[in-house]
Length: 181
Image (tube, rainbow, N blue to C red; front, side, top):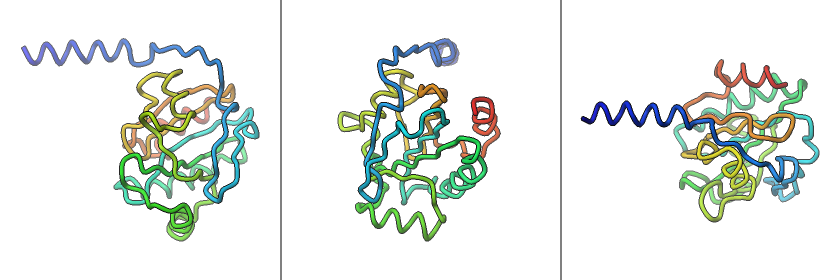
């Protein structure tokens, strides 16, 4: 009985995984976020770019992914990729101060891609960008943990999402980025 239920749920999830079609009254470029140093990051300046948004945390088992995010940024920024780190304490694994996060990222990973300030990424207090992604792409856009990835295409719409376990330099992510650049 449990086996049949599991098979049924798996089939159900398969058919409804990507069937969510957003109406996209807004696109990614319509949003702004505060940068880690207090500046406003206006996403309008990223028009016609591909953006990988990653909610990050300093005390997470996936924190070493910062190195691959930097590698991805260096390899593809000249081709039109923006990597955007969004430090978040939504999972209680982030430092409490933007300055400490910035220093941690620069000293330990030589991060040069844009970082936002500490931002909620799930729940009622989530930044409008993350609510927008969920509204237009479904539950797969809601971060389940740190280092969840949302890939935005050149039209400013969610192209794909990736779980924390998917490394930034994985063949899966690289292939998709290269196909939409």
